Length: 415
Image (cartoon, rainbow, N blue to C red; front, side, top):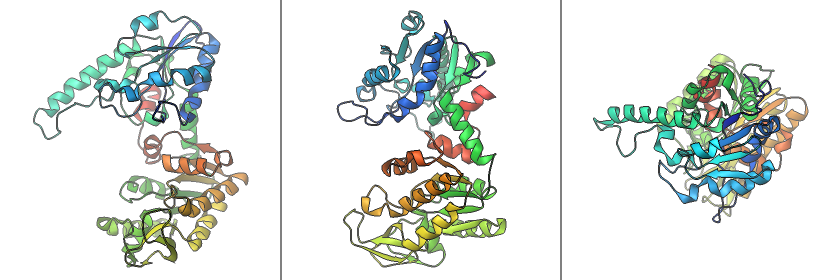
């Protein structure tokens, strides 16, 4: 069943969204991107004459009630965006009466799911090394199933529109789906778009395909790098990873971030790229700084000849040119992770060069997918969100999908 083929008239619909939005110290939403992302799904249900019951997590309260992470803080902005008053259930597991009282066209927002440890389904207060851990885990799984059944009991139909949590087998993202048959559970519009965007990049590849992987550690991206090796024509590895590769190739990296225990892994990646005919693009020069600060003294040096006491904080001018060359002719582009410490305005140049090249390629007909918190923050910082094909809302979920893993939140609905 799809959202478009379903008529929600007279139905109560429990919708998992990702309203884990940033708040300031006064509880005001500072970025409403995630709320806006869920509006098409919620408005479709309302337009049909259905009643959405919205559920989400916020932050990491670790199974305990924390007023700073209460969804009561977002009732007003959600009401304003939806254009209808939103009622609030202060306890997500005791909302049966509020759900039963809902009339067509009315909306109910449940309190933070993660105030209950059952949502994540992990035993609390017991170490994995404890002999009693397995029994505690089994007991928690049973409690998670009951919690999911309680949530399911509020509604006739389940919709998952939270791609950002699709890689987790939580009560609200996967277990709840067991309570609904195939005609009464479906992906929301945002989830469909995310799944299609990943499909476009991984299954419907138009060549050349360039992937840009940034980030500080090779170790956290190894699964993705290895999966991409079989798919890409050009693979750009940038950010902090640069210096692990530079050192592996016999260079000196000063006090730059570097995984000394992953030098052989870096060399293996270089060899694997050669064997598979992948054009591996690494940083050849960098902007080195004498301290980790925006106002640091800087100099342009080879990535493998950084003076003692200095650290590489951004891609250098020659590296930016080689990145742009690998991006501008591409027809499929994936970007995850910045090229430098873009949070400091003086070290945004490398990431900006990547963004500019992606925008140019997109204008020339490429499909560009930007995913992962830092890359999205980069694109937004540069005011270039409208210059790329698709910006993913899912960090970990997107990376696991790229890695080729099955996402529980999608499998629970699609099988």
